[in-house]
Amino acid sequence: MDVKLNTIRLVLVLSLAGEILNNAVSFAVFCVLDFVDFILCFVYKIIDFWIESQWKPCYCSSAKQHIIEGDNILVSEECESKIVCLTSTNLQLEDISDTLYSRPSIVAQLSKFIINDLNKTKKTTVTSTFTIDSTIVEVLRGNVVPRWSDCDCKICNSWTSSSKDTLFVKAEGPKDKAREDVLFIHGFISSSVFWTETLFPNFSTTVKSTYRLLAVDILGFGRSPKPTDSLYTLREHVEMIEKSVLEAYQVKSFHIVAHSLGCILALAIAVKQPGSIKSLTLLAPPYFPVPKGEPATQYIMRRIAPRRVWPVMAFGASIACWYEHISRTFCLVICKNHRFWEFITKFITRNRTYLLESFCCHTHNAAWHTLHNIICGTAGKLDSYLDTVCNRLKCEVTIFHGGDDEVIPVECSYNVQRRIPRAQVKVIENKDHISIVVGRQKAFAKELEKIWKRSKCD
Image 1 (cartoon, rainbow, N blue to C red):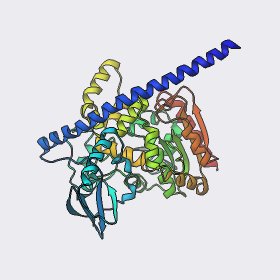
Image 2: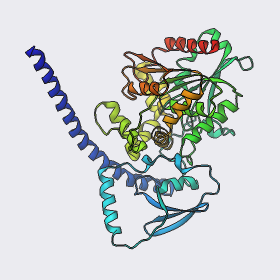
Image 3: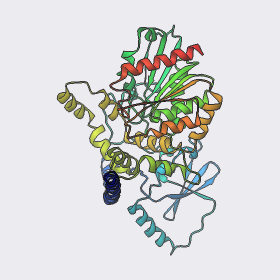
Image 4: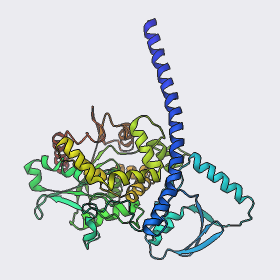
């Protein structure tokens, strides 16, 4: 008995020591990263101006004050003002996550303290103001031109040679005789090949002859358009999917299969078209209930990006979410040069690297805005979306989650089930965020076929 108690105490002590060590190391590492990102801000401004003869807007500067006056916004910045006309935009400000321009850090707090201290000596009077970053205004004005740090290969820019302003859709199955339609939506920094290279070849001949399989590259990813004047809001993503898939292929009723971030888009589509959904299959949905009184967007950002060095996935998510310029550097090194990395990977593994292709085929602008505006920015909407699915949709809801998923914890799927009691949660042991499909594509294809077959009988 004493041995067991001593073992438990030792485990608790080691766990506590590990937590303290992780917190201490994380604090030191992220202090350094805060400073590095601060320096990179100026480095990129100089390089951007040197290469493109124009400063690039970013979200590092302190939030600016804006005043609504009819269709105009008065931008006040360091005692200088200018009017920006918004008469020709469909963008609504509530779609923009404040995590884009409000990410507390030591460097940011120090600079804010210094600016506030200097402003105390100035007498300024501003009425009816709200806070928004000037980068958003620059994007609305359409002054953001393609960045030199983005890839210029044919695959990444194939959309520029097309006259159609639609997403890339990989469609398989009968064109005229399809009895069922299935919409596949991939997750963050991925593309339609996540489905077409895994599931599509493993569906039965019956499914291939009767179902029309529609895998889409969402806006900013894969072969789809990557507009530089877009903020990649939920509305833009959903409207582009509706235009490029549902309208273009005349889809009336359909099944949805979505992974990770794609689950949020799937829910938004389901809420807009509740009578058209035949089944809803979600893989690793990123749903974190927000406690009362907590700022929803900031709470979600800290849940998915906790500024910790361990586990590794949390460290990677923190860098992607907190650091605009470090993440841009990652895109410069990896995404812009993805052909080199693909060649190296193929040379070593002797296999096609479709996962690497999908991982790299995006711009920093698209990834940065999609991460903040979809994952963080929809935090306050997901509860109502799930309630709508529960009360208004009669379709089958199935949730799959990898037991070893370190990107989106399994608790997220059970959180969804609490809002939609009829939803079935299936935890796949020893599988993570990617291997829940990759490596078990045959088994998962059969599971999907069963779901679609049951919805036919209902």
